[in-house]
Length: 501
Ligand SMILES: [Zn+2]
Image (cartoon, rainbow, N blue to C red; front, top):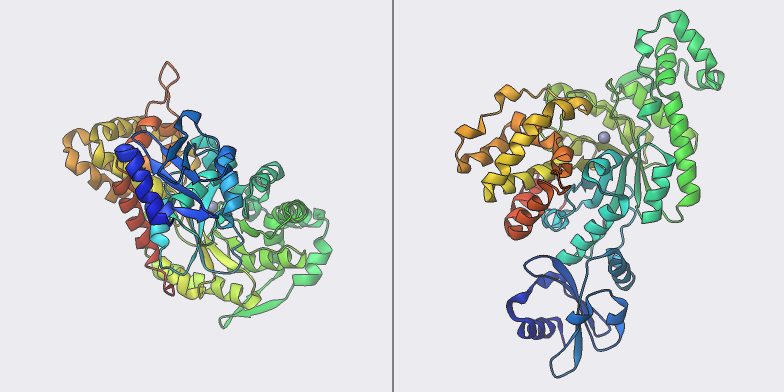
């Protein structure tokens, strides 16, 4: 029996009840596994001659003998137990270490985007980080590490993907959260020490600056290591003079201590290789090249083996829309950061809020020679909302109105210049025009930042108002969902000068 025979046999027996994902069919020792959807949900199908199927959980009534060869077909759930069994049988379903290869993260807030993301990655020489969610996003989507990882792996299985991929526990602030992510099998950890970054330093007078500086336990050591030291980068001289050294040390020293603690925990607790990213992007001020230099030198000196660092780069980085700022000026400043990274070596620069920043992608990739990581997330959600607008305009209108009501509250945790008066009145738009909202920055941001409120909204009986209907419509129009989403991620990837695979 080959895969084709199995597919034919299954289709003959079950007729039109299931639609098989042909690329998902995998075999191991005469046992066959694949994914199929009925009109309500996706199922794992196990076809076997042996008792392998018994280990998988499914409804017993669905166990049937098919064909002359007495093959047993079992319709099984897409649950954690079954996924673990599959991961043992097919090790390619386990996330792995990325290291210094160019990489791209595709956050997936609904947990159904991975097959579309994989379509976009096809033929591109870049390491995909398919499971990527921050602690904040998980709270807003009511998901957890396990669910985020499982959903991404089921997506790999559905697509028949056998290549490597990573799983990024993003913007983690506490060791407890790191521990949970390790327990669930994440392979990449993004430590966000922003709670320990001081943002009042620039306002301090000289006396206060000295006073605070002298309180740092290793202040003398830092002075000895860096004061007056100069570094030649791109023909430019970067010097730690007394004032800048004190300011940078005070701004970042507690944050660096926190990162060291997290790293030491991970090194002890995570038994296999892992990717570590340090993110100082969510700070009020832009990271200067000198601060970049200091953070990296200190992390190296203190033995932290990290792969990526996300800095707060020049410009206005808002969610789900183009870069706001002078691209040429960004390019000039960024080339310094890229040169620092190259000079010191051994790590990649990471770009957060990378959704739809088309104008800076070529610069980012070229300046770093591909030693880079990029994260996107919200843009996938926006494509999904766009498909809802295309396929169920009435539902989209409800979501849109709800988003308008919640915008003022939800914008608090974001840096935005959204002006709701620029969002067209949807009562004056035809159903066909709704999709145009997704090409306008203000309406994109309206839907982008209210995702948590939209997904969590419940009626008086405790039932979700939108969530289930969103999943239903995307399930029904899955081809449209995958096409729109993969095309949009492709637009991102095509701006990187990747080698073809
Ligand atoms: Zn970030």
